[in-house]
Image (cartoon, helix red, strand yellow):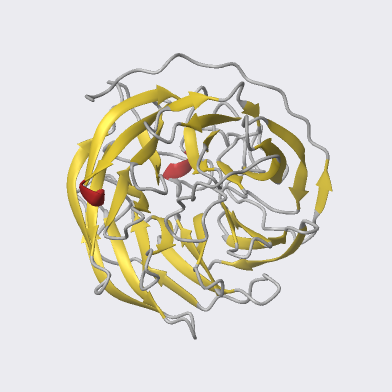
Length: 412
């Protein structure tokens, strides 16, 4: 699909960046917080049955633990800043941990196209990609929201980042150039110069792809390996990370069926299985993971439960107890609910529920796992759902919150 940035990013084919130049501006290192108001958005249709009957965790699974939470909590929102209708930086908000209501409180400016966000395990520093031709990653100190600086990722269009559980390395994926990068993190949370960049040169691109397109870079639950999901080569790469030097050594490749277009991988809390969302062919797959070798084995493609129209899976989440999984579907504008069975080895499709927004790009749990946030790119809204602990059922928590080109929602 075409994009507004030289054709490199399938991720941005929706047209929200129409009017942006083919060469996007680099990151600024200045910062500031300005007021930002918000209004509600209308709700959508009721749920439909499709089959039979975060504080984002510092662990790579992104699955929260269930513990009581009360009062207001922090929420950070990713967007594009260079396109028509986009935001002015990282959105800052609060949400009520009980009822899920979001209130906007400001914006961290001085960051360009912060389309994906992650927080350091110590909770003191926020990291954002700068999704542009001259890709970069930026660190923001949360105590005063000061931008601590940006570093080049050595590639184009970074779309995902994560912090290694030890807190010393930032991992990022360059979609446009099909490469992954490693940056050191110092004691203050600031980033050092890039230590490693690896471009995915094999296998050859899959059907309809013009090259490699790294879409995610994360750490396995045991911490022994880091894995890169590449949509362009239909491959998940496993690496060993040298925690002293930041160097990467490839140890295995896992291949999907041709043209699947793998986008996002989420591990089951048990660590033996993971679930892969395939963007191009609208499927998911259960993967077995070998901790010793880092090898991932991709299982058969399964249905997302979406309707006959075109739909693109975006992201998977798994509950902390490993009982349920959720998939965001762009196009069908729904969230699929799966029962996780056989200690993680099987997904059983339960149903889909409408997301009450357009094009859900990113989903995340609150720290206690009782709320699920969905960032809806086209409608510029964030929907919040109550998560039933027993059944996994989702219930909309009031009117969606308006946020310009909402592509990431990070509840702390």
